Every structure is written in structure tokens, then in C-alpha cells.
Image (cartoon, rainbow, N blue to C red; front, side, top):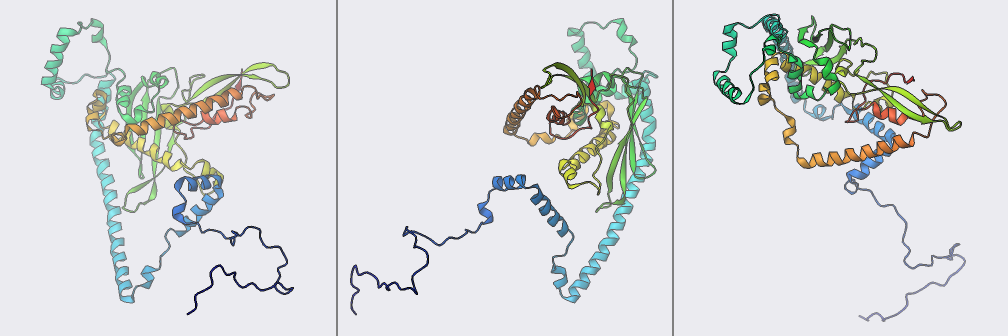
Length: 429
């Protein structure tokens, strides 16, 4: 076989009008056929995906809508089973329905049992309230039964050596001052809600109790003595359950309603007055504008978040995307008061209940706190810059939200970014 000739030029057909292209050939000999590379799922990292979704909210809504439409749809597997197998599956479903009925009956009986024993607890709660408020004194038998002799002796020895002798005025103290405030401040979830301003009002809290509704649900009752903050003698919050039971027969929380607090003028603890110096662009005149903005307070507990309705717009759903989380937190606070604070108030007052409280924060690492603190500092710096820039942008009307809309929006959120109550009208000084 003949070897190919080295360095031989390939056969080239002479150009003719039939084979000559209409356009000139590319200059570069490295030209390649254009094409679009396929995008693989693993090539797109989470940060890129998050950026795409953040810039395309409509895309997120579309995906959520599509995913939501798939819930409850059959994959076709059951339908593909042989007829005898499908009959057996149908039989198991019938058994499960009977089980669900029994679960519902079980939850109903549990509720009735709770009500039965609550009626037995009530006299104890009433006597507790009388002792706390100084209406009666505990009997010697009760004091002896509740006194830890060993701890009492140690406390007496320590007080005899180091503590000064109590004055006679201490013997005239009525009841147990600030009993409920101290108990609530030892209960972790409640303590996070109580501000220094709230304490002055909560010192007048004389009793916390609850009652069951005729239908599934319960009501929390906070009783106050006469005070300088509001005229209410009692402030209640009622939790309602849905009529239909959940998957396991449990009652499903529906919503809560709180009493309106009749605040005295200038004593509303859920708002604060901000004074801001503004300069008019046209006249260059300055003025002081006062506005009322929501602020953190325990008493926001009585204005619970409202669950979204089917009539809400998509934009509203986006703005309140954390509404479910806020509803869950609000319900958990109610449960903590009902199941922990009220039954064991004395243990929370003394702090003994803390030994049995399971804290979820134990699993958090120190590094996570450092990251969060850094983020918070950055956010605060940005907010401070925005407030300084808003001083020069003033409208002719003191209640025009344009100049300080961003600030008002920030003030309507708490540290976690969750919206609070709606801001009241701003007021001109």
C-alpha cells in the first residue's frame, strides 16, 4: 500500500459561480459553529438561583402556583395497580377512616377531661389570688407543707450572718408585690416581650386566669388594679379553633381576638412619639414634626395578627409572607400562658420552673450569633444613613409620608423584620 505524500495540500475544487458563497469567508481559521450550551441543574448554585428569584417575584409566584396545584394530585401509581390490589387499598382506606373517627372522639374526651379537672383547679387558683393580693393568709399547715426545711435553715443562717435585720415596715407589706410581673419575667417567651416601659403597668397585674369556651377554644383574662395607663379592669384575649379537626383528630387553631385597651391620653405603651426636624426645600424654613409610630410592648399581645384571606392580593401575600410564622408564635404564647404560667405561677415566681424548661437555644453555636450581630450592625448603619438623608427632603405638609416613608416602614417592624401594628396618624406640634 502506497504511503500518503507528506505535506500534500488537500484537493481544492476551483471556485465557480455555482459553489462560491455570497458572503466572504470568516477571517479567522478558528471560527466555530455558534451554539447554546445546555444549563445543568448542578451548574447553578443556590446563590445564583436566589438572585434570579429575588429579581423575578412573578416567577416565584408562578412556581408556587404550579407546586400548589400539584398538592393532592395522584401520581398515577395507585391507578396502575392491579384491580385486586386496588380493592385492598380501598379497604385499608375505610379502616383508616374509622381510625380517624376514633381519634376525633379521643380528642373530644381529652377536652372534656381537661374541663373536668379545670373545675377542680379553679378553687386553688382563687385561693392563690387571695393570698397574692393580701386578702387572706395561708394557714400554718399550708406554710409547713410548702416550706423546704433544709433550705429554710440555710437561708436563715445566711441571713443571720450577712443580712441586716428587717424593719417593722416590711411586716406590713400586703400580699406578694409584683407577683405576676416577676413570674412572667422568669418565663422566657414572655420575658422577651416585656419592655422597661411595660413593667410600670404590669406591676398593677393582680391576677392571670383562663376559661374554656363552649366551643373549642379558650380565653385568657388579665386583671389589673387601678393604674395611670388604662381604664380597663380586665383585658382578655380569646383563642378560637376551627370546626373541623386536624389529621390526627387535633383541634386546629383558627384565630385570636383581643380586647381594645382604653389608654389614657399620652399613656399608650404600644406607640411612641418621634420628633423630627425638617427643612422645606422651597422656603428653607425648618419645623419640628411629631409622629406616632408603633413600638415594642407586651400589650401588643392583645392585638394579634390576622390570618390572610382568599381575597388578599398577591402583593399583600408577598408583603405578609411571614404571617403564618407570626400566627404560630402568637398561638404559642397563648399556650405557654395557659399551660405553663397559670398552672405553675409560684414556680415561675421563685424560678424553680426554669430547671424544667427546655430551651431550644442550647443547640445554637456561638458563631451563628456573631454572624447575626454583624448583619444587625450593617443594617443599623444603613438605616442611620437613610434617616440622615431624609432630613433635607421635606414636603410642604407635615403628614406627607414621602420624606420619611422608609423610616416609618422601618419603625413598623421589629428586630426580626416582622411587621407590627399599623402606625397611627402623625401629629403636628
